[in-house]
Image (cartoon, rainbow, N blue to C red; front, top):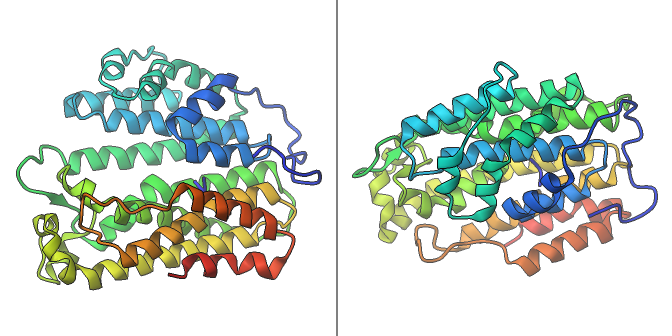
Length: 356
C-alpha cells in the first residue's frame, strides 16, 4: 500500500498497542525486503514499530505470490498449483512444507530466488503474530492471490494475439483485488495499533483507502502499458478500446496514439481522482501520526507526478519508459517532511505535484 527511522521526537510510536507481537526475523524485513522493493522499503522504515513487522511481512508474502505468478518459464498449471499451496499455508489450512526449488531456480534476480527459498520463515513469522493480525494479513493475501490467479487464467496461452480485460468493471475489480484491498488492510492495521480510540469516520477511511490502492495500481497499469502489451496483456478494457475504433493489437503501433489519447487521458483522470481520494484519506488520519501520513503521502505524490509525465509523453513507445527521476522522488519526500508543520503548505503539495 501506500509505500525513515523516527526523524524527530514526538512522532507516533505506536504506544497505543498494548499487546506484544513477536517480530519476523530481522533479515526478512531489512536486507531481503530492501532487495525486492527499494521503494516500499523506504515506506516501511517510516512506519511506527507497532505496525512495521506486520505490514512488512504482508508485503513480503504478497511479493512471494507475485513472484510465483510471474515466473513465465514455469508452466501455468504448476504456477497455479504453487499459488494454491501457498494460499493453503497462509490461511493455516495445511501443514505440508513448501518446496519452491524449481521456481527459485528460474528467477533471474537473486533476491526473488531468496524470497522463494525463505518462504517457510515468512510463514513461521505469520504464525507468531497475534490472532487478530494473522486474520488481517490472511484476508488481504487471500484477495490478492485471487486476483493473481484470475490474471494468470485470463492471459493464459496468449502467444499470437493480445488478450485484454473486457469491461471497465473488470478493470475496477482487478485493481481492487491486487491493490484496493491493501488500502482496507492498511487502514484496519493502523486503526487497531496506532489510534484505536480516535474519533474517526471509519467508513470514510475504508472507502478512500480502497480508492487510494486502486489509484496506485492504475498508475502502474497506464505507465507499463507498452511493456504489458509485449507480454500479450492489455489491462485497458477491450470494449472501451473498440468504442474508439481500436483493438489491443493496435496499441503495439505508436501511430495509434492519437486515437488512444482521449480514452487514455480519461483513465489518467480516473487515476488522479483515486489518488485525490487517497490524499483526503491521508489528511483524515490523526495529525500526530506523522510517520504514517508521510508513508501515505510519498506514493501519492510520486503517483500524481507520474500521471503528469504520462499526459505529456509518448505512452505507446516501448523504448521510452516514463517514470519520475530518483532525484525528483527524493526532492518530493524532503519537501513533504519540511512542510509538514505548515498545514496549508502541506495540503497544497498534491496540487503542486499534479501540475504539469
